Image 1 (tube, rainbow, N blue to C red):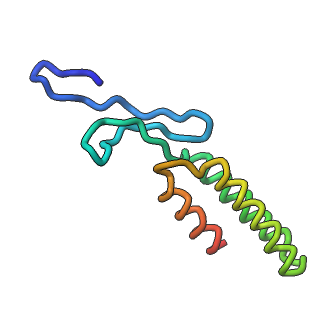
Image 2 (cartoon, one colour):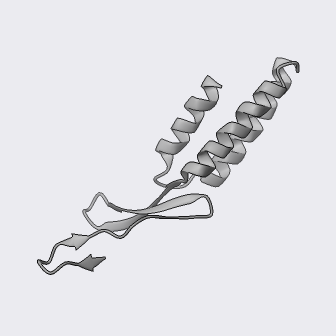
Length: 99
C-alpha cells in the first residue's frame, strides 16, 4: 500500500487473474489481506453457458437434465469454491435456479 503525504493509506486497485478478482479487504482482526472473488466476466460466461445448456436440453428427461446441471454446478463450485467467495457462489446458484 502507498502512503500519502499526510500519512493516509491508499488501497491499491484490483486485478483479475485465472477467473478471480483479487482485491484488498480487512480481516476479522483488522489487518489488510488480499481476498478473491469470481471475476465478473467469468461469472457471466458460466451463467450464460448453463442457461444455454438448459434451453437446449429441455426435450431431455428431467432426470438427465438434473444430472447434467448437477455436474456443471459441482464443476463450478470445485473451481470457484474458495474461502471468501461464498457470496458469488450463492449468487450463481440463485441465478442458475432462475434460468
